[in-house]
Image 1 (tube, rainbow, N blue to C red):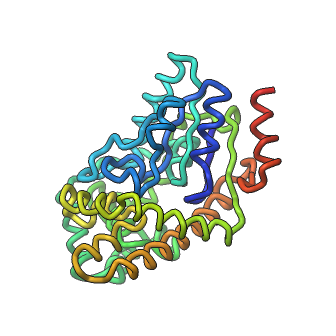
Image 2: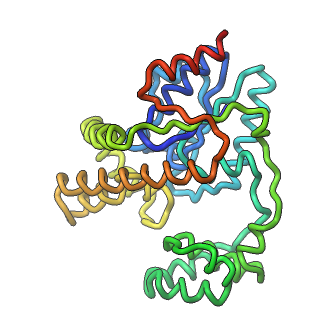
Image 3: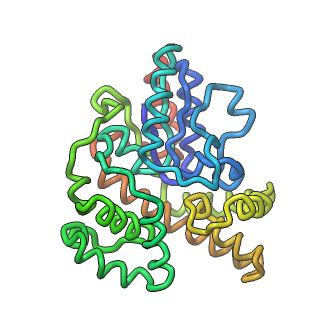
Length: 301
């Protein structure tokens, strides 16, 4: 089973309910919840939830590491085998669209990129800016540049690093077929699509609750463990702004306001991405209690 949706849409609660009713295992499909240290800031399941059903791929990666979609697929395949061995239903849940896409379509066989190549492009991003790297991409990979209207700095670094390291553009590798590990035709796939304004209110309230429950201390430890601000874990929602506050660059109120705004914008992008990319999925309003219960009852009938 695959349960996707924007941040703060109630995905984890629904996945746990399904796992309890059907004898399942909850499997993380969120790129930030894989990291240790950030339990509060990434809204990882707490001890009470972990006691109610098996959970996998949560908090198992050091924030000092660069965890990739390829590594996620390897870990997910091992979890699927564990679930099969124990006759448990795997319930994948999260908001990272690329993880779901990789599960059901596979991953293009892109060769590994040497660290020195990636770091060289990262330094150019810092010194020259994303505009200069965008111009380079138009030379190295005009097909990708034409297809994608804009890329953030890290994706530009990725595309240019692959092109330099392999001698072939990233668009070439992306066109190669991957191997799916979840058969989408046999899986129940649901996308939670709450009302936008209600979702935004939950995002704002939840972030304030995160601050009250120690998110700032988590970011303080994160900066100590992973001082390189380009590491993926350092981009967890709210982490850059709280780190800026800890560095004396803004007060806490401003950091919270910026973090809430960024998270709302991200949730909007998530909703758009899933609607366009994951066609054919069941769409469920998590705030419609009757529809939610009817959907749940369909598995226990």
